[in-house]
Image (cartoon, rainbow, N blue to C red; front, side, top):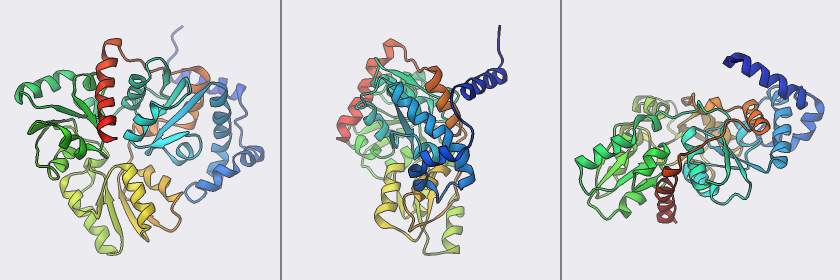
Length: 350
């Protein structure tokens, strides 16, 4: 019999409740005390009491299932610090996905990240806790769009952001991330380079290279909403506040920042420079995750939430491990060319 989404969710919750001890308890708090010590600055104890049973169950179950959890920097702290085995930006996760020995990969991020893990590990099972976790960048371009760009600029190599589907990666020459985009573009032999799909990242790269960069007009729903006026207001309110921004922001926002870099680079900048106050111009959970590890810094949060990233929760991570849902597949004919584009990026970065 057909079961609607609400009924399916309730059935899943009932099965989890019958299988695992998920009620808040002193025992769960004791078992996860070492983890909570890492995040107590950003998660109230009352909230952790709700998280602790799930964290305990997930960490026990992933060992039983020979599973590894890869989590993006935009995951919430209870996921990022509580259950992730590998955490990082898109480049770090792509590299680490090729190294993990486990046969099951649970991708805590958005769908293109899970596809990337599958492309790099076609023989392994890759799960995403919620397949609806999409990406405005990835959905903004198709393989046909890439071919249209090639026709407009004959001979120009296509550098596609890793924030793309396997289909788009497969028709690209090489991938890039926000951390290595300038390096990858400079490594291309042609004078003109096509960048897809993030138009703002491409513009920021164009300002840092002698190459002629042309681009597709995609954007990130998180980063495109920041404005230079917003950043200037923070600086005027407290001139000592450091401002660091992601290169998916507009060039006008980047110009207002003291530092611009990938999520991994932003984290490293805070740890190295130890500013008294900092504004991280990116997704909300980033500040929380870094704040847990940088007690000397006060984080001002003018952040925007990524609704896709927030589809990943402790509850659906546990269900994914328990049930084997939702498995990510990539058509066989796309795996080799998509993997080649990602592996070329990793090689050029190395």
